[in-house]
Image (cartoon, rainbow, N blue to C red; front, side, top):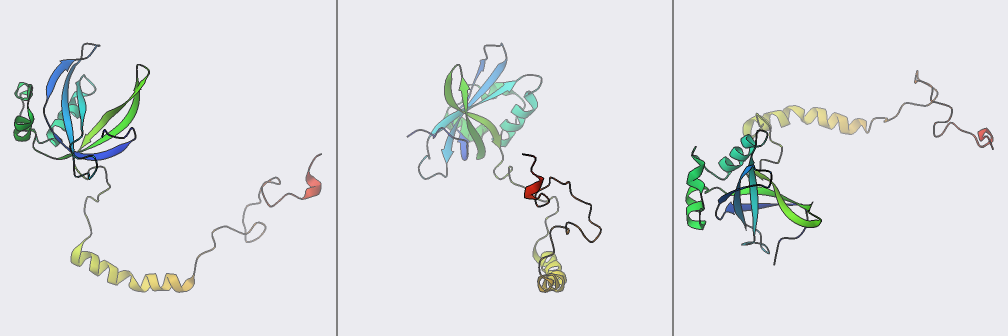
Length: 181
């Protein structure tokens, strides 16, 4: 089975590495990513290409760090096999894949390499445990009062209460005899 041709996020690990040069002369690193933790697709691989250009180098290095690389000499990542990748790039990452058309053919491409869970929102200062319990207790009366009052009116009345007049052609303000034909 191969990966479905659709946008998805998978947990993966590095299964090797290699370097090359693009057709535009830019240096690249390729990391085959082996899917883990997915019942049907575990063991499938897709290669992430990291680019070393003025605009992309920082993100490529960040992605390598997400894989767990702690070095500063890229040559230590030359032609890694699975065992060496497990030592130098040991972390599980989340890869975001998306179909992309290249030279007239559709292919699945790794768009992003992220830390697991990094794509989800998180608070800088989470409210948990006893702090959350204290806040919840403080809010109970307010919430009960809001429930008892019922839902608030969501729209002002059309012709009263100081609301601005609506345009004559706005929905609800037109009469059938106003139609100009």
